[in-house]
Length: 381
Image 1 (cartoon, rainbow, N blue to C red):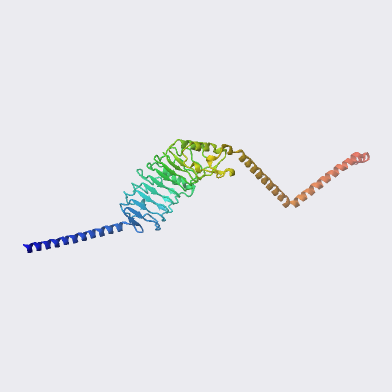
Image 2: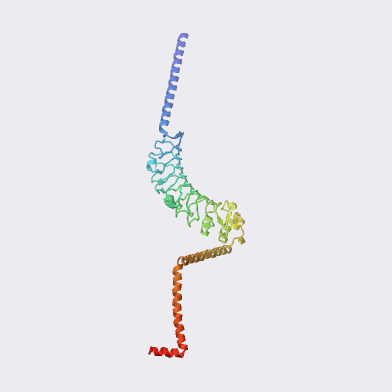
């Protein structure tokens, strides 16, 4: 019995050992297959980790196509991709939520580019050079909430063509829009009208000189960044639009405020409103006597316009004097160049006057001397 039991135990041990070795082999084979599959699904020149794919600074001229189907975050930055189209994302990526395409010198965004990215929430297109952006780039049912177009419009003549897609009406879930560091001068008409959920808008350092009437009427903005632009004062209609949004916080530092009588209404609004969060950082850029003085410390008596008019008149007088002096110099130059002809003309006039005067003198002598008068009559007869 003891021998039998011992032999059975030995057989059982051998069977367990074989089973364990077989399990380990199967596990290793499974890991190898999974590793091989993951290596095949990661594009060349890219790094894949979990659900994040990074294709950065690889001089790519197109979006890699062989992306893992479970990709959630995609970085394709610092390359040379001048154009993206519907072929840029040929396969549907259901899980992709974050897409970063900054620094690619991109110029053209064609229609239906993002149709295969139905759950895209964050899109970074900063540091490009857009000239054309299709109004049909996004599908109607997109879920985009964050859009970064900073440093992407370097010529204000293209701003309408590039930014018109914002008014297409299919970005209904967009909450944050970054248009900072662009050459815009002013926002195109009605580009914010259909952004009904926009709460954060950055226009910092975008050469904005004014905001057109009604531009900010629709979006429920809560944070508006207007720093480092070219505002000299705020029109009354703009301040009225700001006041209609009591929850709106505005940043206005870094603008060249012109502290004369025309800014008095703007200054009064700033002092009575709590919307300008950096009002203590606003300073006068001109006139020279008030430069760098905090705006809220400027007194109404300091904001003058007569002195400026006098300066304008003085400048006008100086300019008029310069113009007259230039005309005088030109006249003298013409006289000098034609001095011989003028001299000859003067001599001719002198001779003509002399002959005329001699005729008058002869007639005078005849009329004054009776003898010469009779002689003249007889000669006539």
